[in-house]
Image 1 (cartoon, one colour):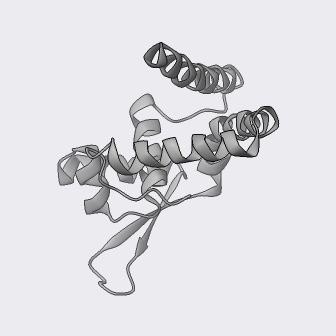
Image 2 (cartoon, rainbow, N blue to C red):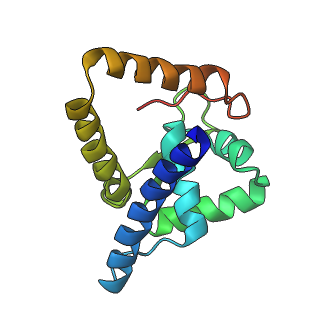
Length: 149
């Protein structure tokens, strides 16, 4: 049962996001392809990664990653910022344009989190937090990055 319930929650988050994206498509506001959306989500989750860090997590060759990054820069969703320490290295920084796009899903997550806070006791919330911490730190070793939000 837990598996089913977790999948239901995960699927509802995805469906909500897709609904909002299609609304924007109907209004002609969205200009990211599906692959570009995934790339931007990776870059945002990694919090200003280098081009090499993005390429590694996305499992893309350097030329393919550079091509995708350059398209995202041209569309205004991403900036390449030269590293202060190593002038040959660039960090990827999301723009306000992307943040307004990202907020489609983030705002819904905040709504659900508020409902969770209202629904459960402090004790239950602490247990839920501990469960998510264990899942994050111990049960997902394939994604060995620290998410900074």
